[in-house]
Length: 214
Image (spheres, rainbow, N blue to C red):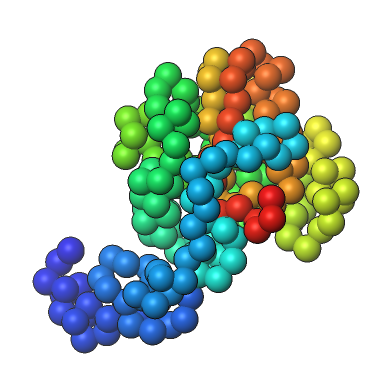
């Protein structure tokens, strides 16, 4: 951080992404909203045939951070979010020889957004765990539309055939899918199918947040 940024940080303190109140430097949430995070236990759950774990429930302040990263261009949020995943994840998940596989974003949406939030989270996890990232999946076809607001059946139908492996890119034997939020698990199931078809033996997933009740 340069001198000018330091001075600006004192004059205009960072705002909490959930409520807008002043927050500590390099902290995306104020103390009140941090206390309002709903932490989940360390036991993975089964969704659509995939073992999934996330540190937080997808509501309140956690939902605000996901929205900031995904829809408001706040790429810097990926680092503290990855840190929370790495700090709380079961030891059996975040360790080599498994490779981190970002859930792919449709090219049209990636061009509009300018980045894939799952790739940013995977990169943050790689820096903290020593694991390698294998960007081996792509997304196409009817999966281009947003999943937000769709029912479970619509989500699963939209993902039929939408996930495939990158031609010529090796599929890891052990793969750990990475995403920002998990709702029905349909996207993870489609990714797992593509990975298994490419030779993966063991596929699990981590995310920052999980829809309550899953």
